Length: 421
Image (cartoon, rainbow, N blue to C red; front, side, top):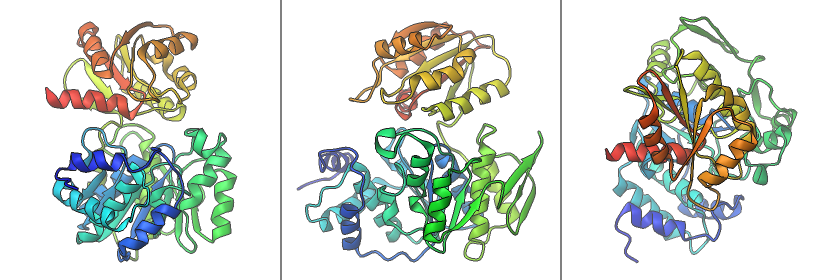
């Protein structure tokens, strides 16, 4: 078998399981054990419905500013697969990732692994081959049965919990909260930054003996227009600049990151200067990302009612625009009506865009969902998000704004197109 390039490996890996999602740890644990890699550095695991990517990015940025060598595993990617595996602040180089895939393939002995499972084990192999001080792992789906959970964590973080992926996780916040809490470990810090933590999450933390730290009880934040303050169990961090990531919700994510760093202060001490520098420098594409130029183009991967509601709030906070054009692509299994209801009055003109794959809505079907939801603006159907952006740019005036949202696939298509130009 000759697999020479990263694309060769990705094509091969995608064929190794009949299903794209097959939750459960038994197969992954077998291959993980076969790799024979011992965890020697602190691991932070971050789960949640919304906010986990931002929390991971802030943790990475602060720890890098503190001088640590950091590994970061996230998903999905927007443009390149190597975005998923970062070593010391940079995307992994393709040859190193190919070596990691080859090692997983060498030991798996025909055990079927999904694309995500294979990639998770390869990321861990790459981290263990690097000289790192700390590793941050973002959960892919849920928590309890997610491949990332095969690696024992030293601090687990659960961010906002909302209704999403109901076919896998349940259709109530209590059911989903239990799945998210599956990353908690006995005697280990467990952070929850959801302002209304589900009772199931609290009960599970108690049952496994985790050191649960809740927003509002064990840590909190406050602020004004200029700066904000964090209060933890034992530390206070005052007069902090707002994170470079835009949006009022980012203080929730920053607080989760600081609560985790407080919990691990004996192993990973971090100075105030590192916190300030890390928050000022943090970057994360596709999270209320405003592109340079006019009319303004805003990219946001918001794809469920909670995150779209935050996007709508952020739009109202950035000033007036005469007209707002919404470039929307969503998956068919998402709560389209619930999401649209929260942002409809912020959008004047809609571009309903087709997304690829069996879960992707066609532009026509999405346009019908918009009509059924009673949107006020006009609707134009487009073949792809990139086509939608092009049409919006043709129609918008310089002082207007364009919002691209609804899915990682939506933002990814636009970013890949912009990359080529």
